[in-house]
Image (tube, rainbow, N blue to C red; front, top):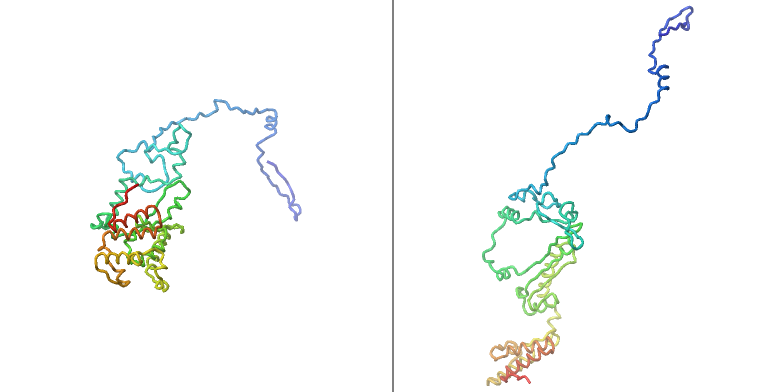
Amino acid sequence: MSVFKYTKPGSLGSVFNVQVLWRPNSTTAETAKKDEEEFRVLDILKKRDRQQKKLVRRTEVQPDRAERMPTDQNWGNVWPGPKTFHPSSVPLPIRQGYVPKGQAPPGKKGNAELMKIPNFLHLTPPVVKSQCEAIKKYCTEWPKLLNSEEAIEKHYPVEVITSDYCHASPTIRNPLARIVNLRVKLSTLKLDKHARDKFLRLVGDCYDEKTDLVTFVADRCPMRKQNLDYVNYLLTACYHESWTIEDWEKEKTEEDMEYYDWNNNQSKKSIVNWHLKCSGNERILTDDEYKSFDISEIPNAEDYKKAVSSLMNDGETDETVNNYGIAVRKLLGLPERSDV
């Protein structure tokens, strides 16, 4: 503690006593001198007695969930919908991946290949059956009259074919899934002679004569629904266009026809005249009477008609020429040709 005396400014002879109290520093001269004399050693390696021993607590590792699953569990609750593959949720030894020859593919744990692709583990038969039972109340009964393929084809002649794909890709959409095939039998379409001929010329190679099927394939649009609308448009447009008769079509003569029609040609007139002359009923007929004459009255005339039409429309081949010769011999009552 120290005492100071000083005179207050502005006053004469006035002396004030002021006491100033302070706390000395923690380091005194003696302690500082002691620290300078003492050399502290840096202990880099800690002594063992100072180390605190860590207590290792061993916890019991639970077995994998896939190994603890009961065999009679409801799989629909484990895998209710489509999701990424999880190995602990699937109690099956699934493997996938390419490995060198002689080695087993990688297992399901830590397998990135199984997580890349979509899976159908949620569509098991019991789950599908339960889902069908749930939506059955929204469905109608199958018609009892549609009990055969013939009945289905008769009442539903148009058949649409599409394809779905499952593959490993960043997207589950496959470009081939957009393709739509529409098939219908030509005999199910109500077409007369002119409309049938025009319809076949419009569809071109889309018609298969052996199966009598007209097939339209659409893949130009990016979506399946768009291609489906397009094939329906093609069928509708070709059907209505085939019934349209242009003015120039009425002026066509037999020489302008694109195919050989036996009923409108001289071949039928010749065979009708020959039959009338042989039966003793020879007379002169008009063109309409020749066209409407029923050739079923003439024996073997139907085979002769097919042979001549095939020869004129398909061209001269060994088969068509041979069939024509056989039909002529049957028509004239001549014996079959003996092989030389």
